[in-house]
Length: 197
Image (tube, rainbow, N blue to C red; front, side):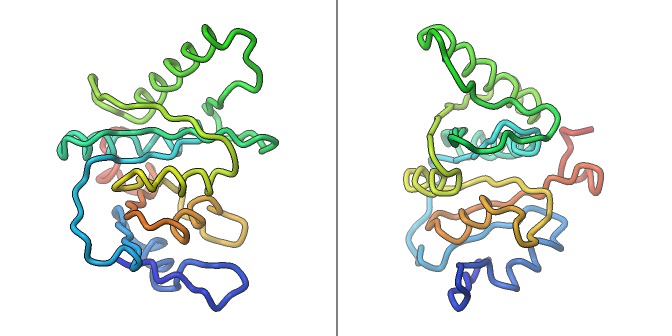
């Protein structure tokens, strides 16, 4: 569906119909910005923004399956935001604040991050993915990186109230790339989260 971004407010906001569908849908929702037009679409690269939380990791399983079926590249984007609060979700792995010996510590952290993402996210053995790291405000970095992608895979916990899901809403409002939004609510309906059993 088209997100129908509202521009009549001081800030750009997700349209009421799209927001209602996202809140109520028991399955993933695909959003295609109207600015994209009718251009031919081929899936070559999937972008999975990942802040190191288990909620973000829950998108890896379906994204990896989709990438495998489409023979597409899977890119996991981790955005380091200076001064941002560290996520409080248990099991979170964030980028190190200081690296003494980058030639040793950075590759070790990247390997650990990808291994944990695959394990927590339920990716099949042998899933190939590339880790990309960006710096800055998360929403802006994701939108910028999405210019090189064909689909963004977003995970969220179902809250769109003011002050919640700001990064997701920014990405939905500002990107020209199609997105699939996966609601991460493993206890509600296991049909859509078979790897979490």
